[in-house]
Image (cartoon, rainbow, N blue to C red; front, side):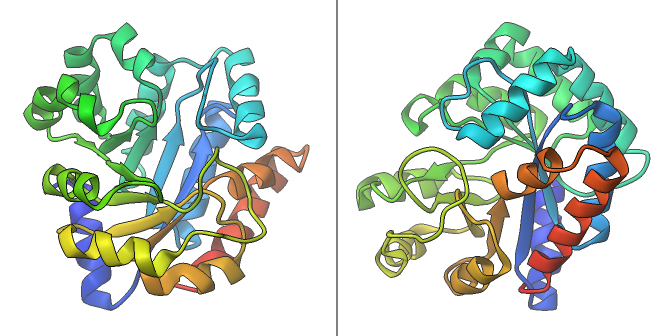
Length: 263
């Protein structure tokens, strides 16, 4: 069983919802990223997304863009991230998902990429610039190696499109909270009741809300609609906001704990 499926089954059995956190791999270093993943798990994260640094991350706001620049300047690449995941698998079985852009997969070679994901212990990939209509380009590899492509549903998605996405989705649905790029938001203008009214008609797997969630209060506000919450930029802000590596890890741990307390 894929670790994502196993985790959601455990959470459902316990009557809990998932906390999914994000860090950019290699910001500020791969060693610190390793510590951050373990600290987030210790403080209540159920799944961790590792951002693969990319020179043109079109779905990301300024916080994650800056993290990408820092990681790339430090020489981080996909091969080194695979090495990080190999190390992590000696310490944890938390589900790990890569958030990345399609060009990185093409450059590596799709078959070789998904084979390596399976080898080192990556459970899924989120590819913001690969629309559902073109996901057939990697479907044979995700199926072959058991590495899920996590599907995204936007607030503007039609009911017809939602039904098609849900039909083939694996792992969990990434339900985008707002239009635009990632980044913390003070409020949400999406009609979540209407959006999830459509999604819930067709979804066979857990539904998680991401983009803009930045506080325990927002987790509390949105948890009733879904099976999990995804927090990215707000975690990266904790990493960016402190100069000392030990304090970065401690700050992320405290923040993760405050979010998990609402779930």
